[in-house]
Length: 204
Image 1 (spheres, rainbow, N blue to C red):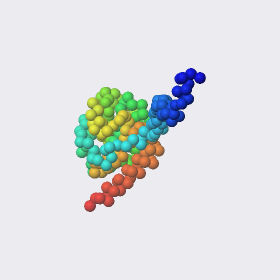
Image 2 (image 1 turned 30 degrees about the horizontal axis):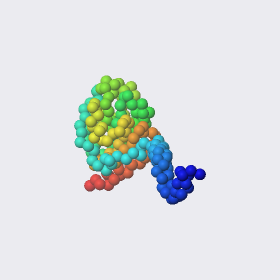
Image 3 (image 1 turned 45 degrees about the horizontal axis):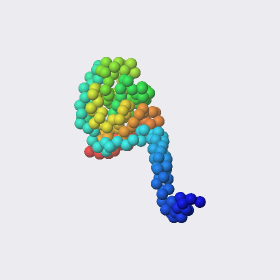
Image 4 (image 1 turned 120 degrees about the horizontal axis):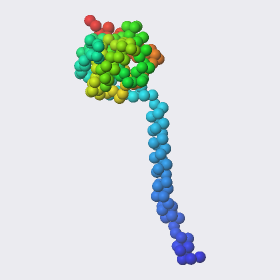
């Protein structure tokens, strides 16, 4: 046995363990960090995008005034969103998901259950006009948000997004992504009907 062996043999076991702890931490820290990041990624992928809350819920609609989309006569402003419950749909001709939800809005417009207004987001005027002429125009009013500034004020993440606005001009609900028949019938329209009833009850 060498002198070095004697030193190692005489070393305090607890001292050896203390020396090993940092090595364990160096190994465990990346593993733990990876597990946390993987969990967050999985949560983000499985989370329903329509569940993302809006900071504007319950607040008055932002003040704005937009000119009409090319070929239309009625633009859209914040003053148009008072006195009756309404829906605001943020759309664009280049938006694939907007095409998916468009038939749902055409049926809604035909039902006349609630006014539907369009906010055309960062679109070329001729493209927006051609899109509505070809696909059909379900909107009572359509504002052209050419630079996207109004959409930013509304807290829009991307298109499409749809808002329910109460009769007193407050944002009551925000739907992110394409509106399906299920979302319309099970979530949006029941809220619209409740808000319409409340508005009637407040009338003198």
